[in-house]
Image (tube, rainbow, N blue to C red; front, side):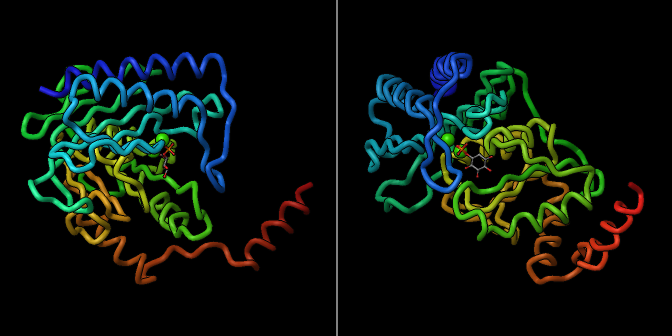
Length: 289
Ligand code: IPD
Ligand code: CA
Ligand code: CA
């Protein structure tokens, strides 16, 4: 019941993003390498206006600062442009992510509710991913399902890296391990599309540290409604304010949780070349010239 209206909103905002991409936009820094553009702000303003028209009672929590009606039963998590770094460089891989949470009466601001609807729209491929709790998930009106890949060794997996406090993130070590143990680990630059791709089986799993609810709300519902599983790295229930997200096809999740356990404990790490081995490579290159 929400999906047709919110799909129209996502398509309208997506058309604006396509125009901005064609004309080119200036990039500003929110911090470190956290980029923002006029396109992010314009898309959020448009989405805020339209959500307010269609669903005047609903709350809105947007990445670019919208905090409307935060006490209400329903709340939209809005990422007006997920993949800003790609967008700012003219790389056409980004999306709009809109996820709806229903919150129990009397919930405190930090309490989690239930995700009930989600739409992720990729305006460059004209791909609209949608899900509604209990009804399934679709890509451009066709039902989607997670992959049947049975083990990590046969899986294509995805991750991302934070744009703030980059040096504090251990993820490059996890990236290293997952790359060596799977068909490959991709870092495409849009967490919401990564989750949508797990939902439709293009990817078998996705993990990331420190995402925000606007990145994940719509994608989590998509993965769950497509038959997949979303947890933290220990296999425990995912909460919207969790600092860890692990989404998978629901067949390789136990193996991945086991691997995270090993990696956090420093067990079974694949050795990286030692300084002596690097020196040997350097010497071999110099000798080959
Ligand atoms: C970012 C993207 C990226 C992820 C970052 C997010 P933004 O969102 O989803 O893939 O690795 O952690 O912050 O800033 O482009 O909306
Ligand atoms: Ca984002
Ligand atoms: Ca964003």
